[in-house]
Structure formats: C-alpha cells, structure tokens
Length: 330
Image 1 (spheres, rainbow, N blue to C red):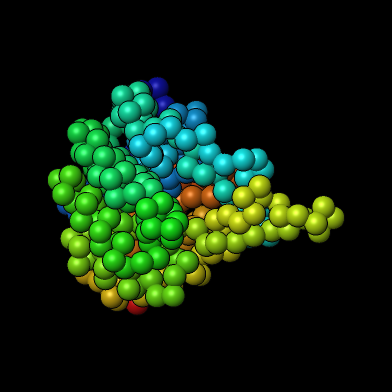
Image 2 (image 1 turned 60 degrees about the vertical axis):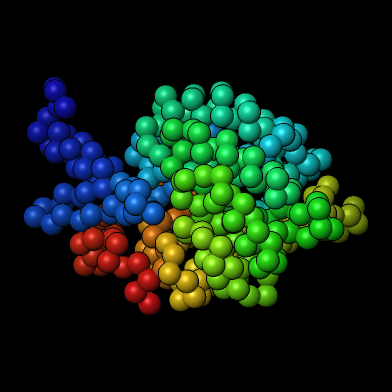
C-alpha cells in the first residue's frame, strides 16, 4: 500500500479483508468464510467445472486466489475431443451445451495442467471427474488422490454407463451407490457426488449417495434441453439435445438444493444459474454451504470477483454477521 493516499489505502485494505473472508465496514465485521468437509474456504464462491477450464484464461481478469476454490475442467481417463459442432446454442435465459467433456485426459491433467494451475492458485482445488464405467471412476479417483493441491473430488454421474445400455449413472440409485463406493475405496479425500436434475426424485439419488459414504453433494448439473432451427428444419446442436444452464434454471436449482438439504445430513455445493450475491445468499439459505458459478463466467468473466466483493456488503445489509449462520435456514 506504499505511496497510496490514505483513502486509497483504506479501500485496498478493505478489499484484502473481503478476499480473505472478512469485511471491514465501519465497526461491523462480516465473515463470509465457509467450510466443506473440514476444508475452510475464504468465501463460498467457486467457478464451476466446464466454465473455467484450468484457470489460466481468467488470471488476466483478476487474482484467482480471491476465490473460495476452483472446480476445474471435467476430467476423463482418456483424452476426449468432444462432440461435433455446433455444440453451443443460445437460449432466452441461458444456453445449451453439448461439449462432450472435451479434455486432455487424466494423465496430462495430473502431470501438466494441475502443476501449472498450482503456480497461480494456492488453495485446495475441486477435481471434477467423469467416467463411463465403474473402472473409469476408480482410476480417476486413485489418480486424483495423489495430487497434493486437490482437496475434494466432485464426481459427475451424468455420464452414460456404457456397460449398462447407456443410462446415466445419476438416474439410478443403485448406480449412484456403486460409483460412490468405488470412488471412496480409492481416495481419502472428501467425495462429493454431483447430481443431475433429470430424474423423478433427486432426493432419492442424494440418499443413495449418503448411504454409500459420500462426504457431500453437488447439485444441480444441467437440465436436458433442445433447440430447433425452424428455417433449416433441424436441431441447432449436432447432438440434437444438450444441457441447459444459466439464470433460467436458478429456481429449479434452489428447489433441488432445498429438498436435498431436508433429505440428507451432508454439506451441499449449490449451482445452477447463479449470477449475483443475492443468488448466493438465496442458495445458501436453501441449504448450500458453498456455490459454483457456471454459465455466467462465459458472458461476464468478472462475475466471481464482483460477487466476492458484493457479498459482505449484502450480508451487512441483511444483518448477517457470519454467512454460515444462514445455511439451510428456510
């Protein structure tokens, strides 16, 4: 702060306190720290997997270390080029994507991407892993267990189970249990099962994960959707259907988080259409201990930074001294 005018120094000092989870506004101190399975986060804001890659593209916008954590690009056993183009479609209140888990494969992620990310982000990461068989999940969890800067495994069970006709793991409670048990056998790190909303009863899947030993739940993944080009008389996406994300699914996500919080005794990471500090507070009141910001990163790369700055001010306005006090208050 050397060389700054007194008011500039105070303003910068206030930002530093906010980023470390404490806000200094007059005589009021607001804590926006939170915890996930024993891991303390400076704040509940986490960029969601698939919208932040491995962080390097975003370091030009702000210091990544202001974030609570990062859920990095979904990783599979083998390298995947992704689905055919076009694989992105705009919607009135969000977007459809059918990217198809494009990633360089776990070996390159562990040996190259994560060490590079570790040089610019110095907090525990969330490893999003995606498999097409139980064996895939076992291999991925074993590999991520060895990575020092991975704090939590986020298990994406929205992939098709190629061994059982292509039904997504996350639509069958027995499959949810099987995947969770397989991952837990291979890692000592906390395991969070990422649930799909494309089911009749999401609480059934959450209970299955809890019974299999999950340490937490992440929800929701994208909602299945489709767009049609009426002039070309064909689907907009090459894959025809894709995952709908963005502000349009926020009420669905809040409802799902609330229901799951009532159904299980596990910490939750809430996601789905979040784009403001108000959304974060609402999601936490529904039951989330932390949140992930997804689609909004793609249209507003400063969104996480702005939410982290605004969150303590909103908490002060609402009379919230410690943000953990509002988790699941509804």
